[in-house]
Amino acid sequence: MKKTFFTIIFLCLTAMLAAQTKSQRLIYLWDVTRSMNGKKGVNGMEVDDPNGINIYSDVVKFLEQEISSITDASTEIVVLPFKESVLETWKETADESGKKTIIQKIKNYNNEGLTGTNIVRPIHYVQKKIISNDKNNLLVILTDGKQSEDFGGNSELLNVIRDWQVYSKIHDAYALYVMLTKEAEDSEVIKTIEDTENIDVVTEPGQKQFIFLTPAENISANIKDNKTANIALTSNTSVPLPENIKVKVTSTDSILSINQIVTVENKEIVFDLKYSQPYETLKTQLAEKTLVPLKIELTNQSELPDIVQLTSENINLELINKPEKTINPLALLLFWLAASIATILLACYIIAHFFVNPSTKFSKIFIDYNDGAGEQRINMGGAYKLLCTNKKTKFSIFSKFFVGTVKVEVNEFWTHPVTIGSGMRDNVRVSGLGSFELNTAETVRKEPFSITNDSGKTITITTA
Image (cartoon, helix red, strand yellow):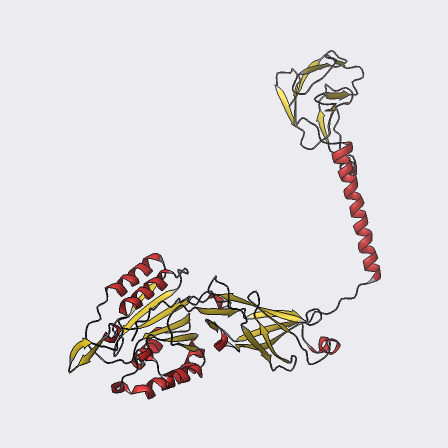
């Protein structure tokens, strides 16, 4: 028989939503009987099987490639080589160290020794010892043989497959039964797998992709506004999905009557919301939030070029029934009146503070009263002028808001009020001097100038 090149592209189960905090457990049940090397037993002796295929190294390479490609470091990898029973159990997390360790064990494994093939016992072992519903479990069975008659033959294997459907739903598990060669194919086993949920069979290993679509567990729709609902799908692969994936959406709830087949587009299932009652009736009957169970299922798996699987078929649709709000005309009038007043006030503030009385171009004023105390620093902040006086002066909030902020400097030097602010360009404007004398015709920012009061006392002022 022509050797089959084994390169299944297996893209493993990834990010699941909601209980979506669950990580993944990837379990490889690996047949290492000598038939994988193209050998068989004759009178207790190992000989080359003229009809056999040596695929052992191809399977090792496949496991190496697939484990290396896992990107989610929280994934648990379990590899179990088996013949008549499980021979080893290797567990690692999918960080770089864990992947390297388990790949090395696979490459170094010695599968010497003739035995029969018992697939049932290793599956039972995995069910009892490995799988648990703390994670999303994916079991990949890789075998080139059939269940040996010494271990119950097909009848035992078929019973295990039929029981898988109930077991998998309890334990969040899915299985792939990969028949690596033509000799491993069995029509009765294939038919039983096809009739069983949460398990698929691969009979032609080659360029195949296993695509897992994870639907959002909870979606919502407003009974008044929404005529359709969307179920977002997360794929375990970045490659484009096959075209024409068809999904059936059903609901048997008394509120909704849905039995619709739709095509997946842009990783979304979009379906029509068909209510059993008109909106006017529903809005009086339903609570503000009502959960309605939906079921989704693939309808054309056999037509698709790849194996596509929904990781969950049960979705909760939350129907939102928000009471319609009636607006009080007086309240609406008051609202717009308040909004108008607020707008006017804001406009006045902006005009006063940014156009009429903007803050000074200098941020600080230093005044030396020549009394031995040194310079006094006045931080202007957002003020538009400095008022110098010998009396404490306060400005109302109204003045601050509509006119602007004024800094006040109080000292007995100022026998009458004088203001200092920004002039044109870099000039400093000094107003209200009266009988005071300014020692320069032009005051410029950063250059000191002096003022002498009517008592003959002189001070020095610098802006910065």
